[in-house]
Amino acid sequence: MIDTAKLDAVMSRCPVMPVLVVNDVAQARPMAEALVAGGLSTLEVTLRTPCALEVIEEMSKVPGALVGAGTVLNPSDMDRAVKAGARFIVSPGLTDALVKASVAHDVPFLPGVANAGDIMRGLDLGLSRFKFFPAVTNGGIPALKSLASVFGSNVRFCPTGGITEESAPEWLALPTVSCVGGSWVTAGAFDADKVRQRATAAALLKV
Image (tube, rainbow, N blue to C red; front, side, top):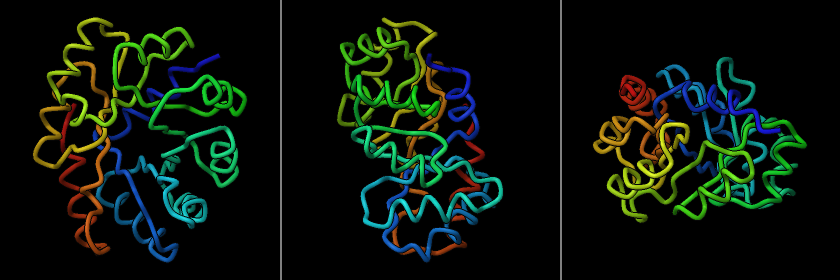
């Protein structure tokens, strides 16, 4: 059984969900602390680096941080992420196996969709919350508006991929967008002060 309320709680917590690619475990806690201090507490740690699972473990120790795993490609990835402490799961795509695994783990699951067929398959599986990915490459705001007009207000999205600090407000203004995913908050060499400042600005964006 898909618990939409749990995923809504994740998606509505902050207007921007930082998408994190962390190569150094030593940066995990100070990065999470800076993000939370700035007002962004929903953190997606992508499984794109060898230390990603350790990063999830470390960031999960930061008070106020809600840490999830991104770039989850199969049930094995999900198993490892949940064991590391991930409290929600994000995937670039949608598969039956991942949906079943998320139900088995009772963990909120945000799958990636790129077109109407993806969304229809998700609806058939009991899902109604999706990551629109890659957002800009897939036609940007006009494309998402068109998709949203077909599926109505019961379907909600977290657009991710190519969204910037400058374009985020326009995405967040769409009535079916709960939050956006973005990597700009932690872009460049890690600097805790800069991350906190960017997070503060991003947290002030209103849906």
